[in-house]
Image (cartoon, rainbow, N blue to C red; front, side, top):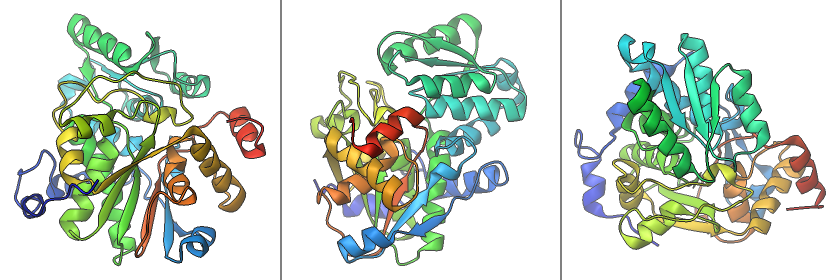
Amino acid sequence: MTIMKSDVLSRLTEEKALPVTLADIEQAAARIVGRVARTPLIRSRTLCERTGQPVYLKLETHQPTGAFKLRGAMNAILLLDDAARKRGLVTASTGNHGRAVAYAARELGVRAIICMSSLVPANKVEAIRSLGAEIRIVGLSQDDAQEEVERLTESRGLTPIPPFDHADVVAGQGTIGLEIVENLPELAAVLVPLSGGGLAGGIAVAVKALKPQIRVIGISMERGAAMHAAIAAGKPVAIREEETLADSLGGGIGLQNHVTFTLCRDLLDDVILLSEDEIAEGIRHAARNESVTVEGAGAVGIAAILADKVGLSGPTAIIISGGNIAPKMHQKIVAGTTQ
């Protein structure tokens, strides 16, 4: 699915031609420095040998919250005025964004309510609770949780921090792209977990503005891949959220999506879908061969290579987006006793 267009490339150099610009991302990088980790980019010997190409892992598992989401949440919250912070924060989350908002809120002395569906794993719920945020478990989908956010925003005047469809959140996630290009100037491709599109869209803006020839490939699961369905339909569409090992990639993108659909539609060079077995193999490989604990969403780039679903033709970075998997589940997957 090659969807890159030359006119879009040229627009990347024009201020505000897209919902998020390179300047926005550079400003975010300066804003969050010291509050968010600059994560390591390590060479994978096993994946280099398998592909015959230089392959590197960008370890967002090294963030204080165990996932990349802290970048976007911190940037968005730092940009709020005092009045908006004092009203309190609210968000919907499949786990990692909620943890990021809770962490940032605690660091900045702000109260937060995190709304999640019953599909969010218990370990992620407890991690958020331990940071002092109030938790609301609502319904069976991210959309149900978002309805609660909208209700609380209206009834209590809380300030929403969207999980992905917000320019400040996207700019924060895009700082990963800046770091990769700085550390690996010869970069040819980036493999990015794809859900609501905040991570993929932000990275695509950053790397393509700096080096337009870099390919950005979104990777998702076969079960309820909302952004893939939206790109195929040419507009945001409703999808049924399903249980998956890549639980952080679940949920819709919002039928009124304002930012990330445009970025992913215009900037992603391809989208790849994976089975549950393939995702499990990615988790196992990371543990057995890379000594890295990853959740399903964080393993999809590795999984795509192992499944021979992506061809590499130069130095490639894989975004290991998070490691917040329940320990018992991780043990079973690595042992091969369950998906």
